[in-house]
Image (cartoon, rainbow, N blue to C red; front, side, top):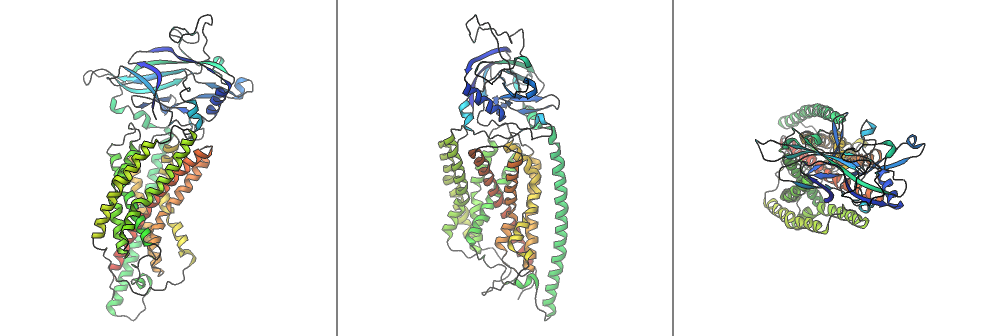
Length: 613
């Protein structure tokens, strides 16, 4: 939710110590201020679609938003821990031609907090605070303070008329303002003795605005316009540059890529040499008509394509939905690489994910129907409805439950009822019909061709060793896919919960390809060892082996919650774990489908390469 604030700024017209308002805060309000200062809440402003930022001159990077106030150490006030409010600010901007007068937009909903554990420099580290606490709704826009607004603008009369805002920086101040008490206070005529046009605002340790007792607070702001050579096309570069500590991100990605590529080569070489030897041996046995007993994976050729014993319909639905998630992920990454998902378009990435998932419904219906037909299923209507509703229903129930909690708490982040109706309309009006269309063509298509016939009587599976137990194999299969994405996952989590911008989609695409390769290879290897032990029940295990990476992802989310975040309160914690469960569920479907179809291709290939009577 974005709302206009009371700040009034005219294009290229500077202001010095302009009074915004005067407010008498009682003890309860001061207590609330101290609470949000302790929790390190930050305020987000937007001008011309640019988020306000505080600049770190030492390391030359910016952080979005600015804190409500600060806490002085005990040594500063004779052993007492004191809270001070930033009630004067300075704004530095750069803006487009058409706007002659504008209002600052305060983005209260997405405000997040800083915590001293995020980077290696204590002064610059950030802690996550979810922006849906009741206290934010109660404070409303009383979080105005003294700020200096620095607006940077670019002019090029050969290219366009007027000026364009290309930068927005904020410098907050804490000032206990003084004025002549003999005169009546007026926001337009009163001259403050602590700052005015001749006496610029400054942080004076002896005159900070204390929040310990009920007091009068005067909110003021400066406006400073600074010409800049930054062009309109590059005005977001300063936000995307990020923390200089993030350089480790690039080295970590390259290191992970090298390790996974090396492992890919080793696994591929082993599999090719072993399989070639097996296939040659089996074919020679048939050619020489050796009276030898078959052993290994060829022995189960009459059962390897037998339908799964447990719920073939559910497996086909999950695999089809996984294909839908995969198509959504690839499409989203393509649009992101082409530059269509700029961070300047707030909510663009989430909107793209939602719409692309809806429009990829036909893929889910098609592949779910073809698999169900291969398994010999007859209840095609039930299969189609489950494909269209199972995953969206789970997500909808979780999302609606969390939204009800937000409504109950009075948080401004609660999704409006009209938006919920629009989401349901997308589901039933677009996604469901597309799944039906895909399912229709899937059932009309010929059954997947398999190279061997299935015996009428199933073969008895011999006793297995402990290391071939399904639970052990499934748990082991998810380690490598998770390891391929765990480094990138840290930066994605920081963008989600620590108020950072994620915009390295090129690296993310590489990680996605690494994930595809690792899921496919680990599942093929696990399936090959399973078949060599004469266990032909590979359908569900192939899906769960790579899909178990989602369990590690959720465990990582728990670790991240404990070690990196300091979220308090049931609702805030429920929001975090609810959203992370949805992400883990989508990751389960994605990785499970990749492993399943890779294993299906592998089994068809190896059994099609041998001679079977």
